[in-house]
Image 1 (cartoon, rainbow, N blue to C red):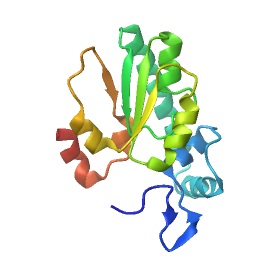
Image 2 (tube, rainbow, N blue to C red; image 1 turned 90 degrees about the vertical axis):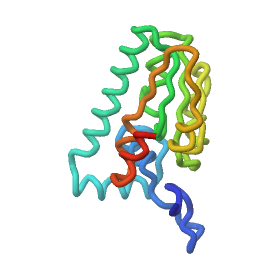
Image 3 (cartoon, rainbow, N blue to C red; image 1 turned 120 degrees about the horizontal axis):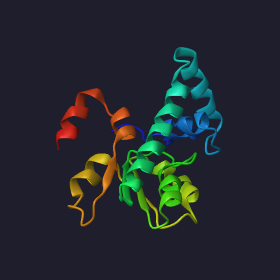
Length: 169
């Protein structure tokens, strides 16, 4: 595996690489990004000016899905490949609809864990787990209560060569 997103470059420990979770935070008008993330976001926008819109549309879709699932009685959510839970995301939508809702965010990138914990602080019984999708997904036990798993962001970020194989596991 290469250098994790947001990790210092091995040859120059003072330089931090842009991070896709923080770039998405920038496009969602969050405040958990830095200059390198903003610069990369602007470069991406030059090639794909529609990308920030798609990020916001995907986030709006997830909010609608969570709202619908809570209406159906689902109160526990496991969001795999979540990135930063910023901008009125799963835990906020679920808790607003049902204060007993619980959300666990899982992402492979350990550099965003502290910011994710800060973003969910004080909002109910929610958690953040590092370690990534494949290992966590394989250890999952059958639920005792009905749950839904959010894979939209995880599939979006998957390597094309291995996405199908991982989805079958």
